Image (cartoon, rainbow over all chains, first blue to last red; front, side, top):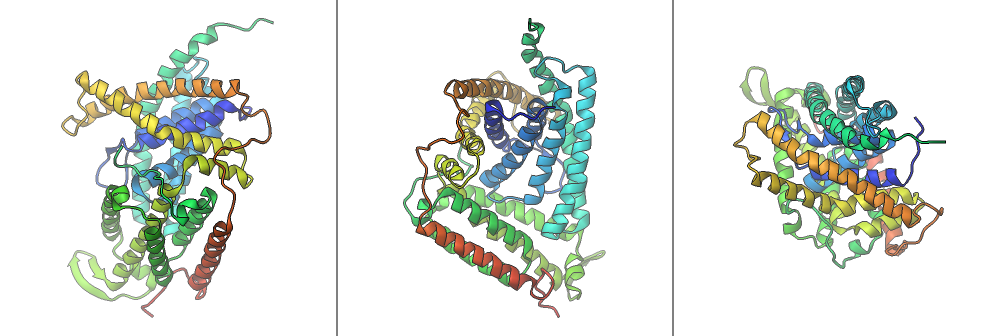
Length: 184
Length: 275
């Protein structure tokens, strides 16, 4: 895809980040492993990345997570901020394929979206996050891998259900204009 | 929104610093506390950040609720570290001084206590820096000064829009939530898990779609006003670097270098009092 960075992307990053931060508050606790929960904000980020591409996805993840943590929890856990950006970038790379804005988000795209998001989350939470935790914070390996695995599970569930539904819904609304074709 | 940190207008030398200075300070500060496991460095940092925090005249009411929240997370995390890996301290410091046998292979050792004390210190040193950055930095001034130090104004603008719209989006969120609750959707802990996810969706859908509309509206308005036409733009609330900015930056850079030298002098990032 062509990676253009125009006014729409600037605004999408801004408002996307604001949304992401606002949704930080909304969490559904997942078991007893500390600091992991079902986070609807992940679904939002997956959706934004799928619509606007890797730059928007990555920055919303990075900025949103850092800012959200800072505003709500007063500290920034950097080793979990970067994986968030990884998820956004990976999903965003396939943005053109999903064709959400053109109303083309059908079965094939839904399957692709979910495969991509599962791979992206696996890389981010089972590999990147625990490694950074160990390298940066020297936390016990089995603890961070357990946390990573929970985060992975929680995120693929929430993106898989909520993210997919938002994308389908938005594709239906946004797709109306694509029935017109440009005449030369 | 009561539980969230936000900027508050005050007149101290910290408030008068440029936003970029504070951002650089905050980033370097958190990187140092991330990397260093040297107890002495961390203790000095903790004391310093408390001093700076006091100088910024931040009131307890501004940060109290958030602080209690962090303490809760911190405790849970420390307990979790112990249960997942009671031998982590011994692994790091190389010695074992048992204090108290609990059960199974769970023995509380001095090394473990010391290691977890360091983890706690790392947490605590960053908190005042974050508080200070958020509470004393004016968002629009921050975007302007980011551009002043050479970052493209698109980035500054994204940042400004994000900070500007957080309260708006939160407002939308609670409006939609109240509207849905009025229609009989249960959002409290009384509802079972699955129906809570469902009711969550009934808030998030309208919120996301209205925000997507907002993205269109705002970007159209900016386009109409010719945003992005020129390579440069002027700022209303820009603040030039002053003497104090340079002093602060010089201080933090020197401090970081010193901290790294002290931390890595013996070849390890851990300060080991046990050998």
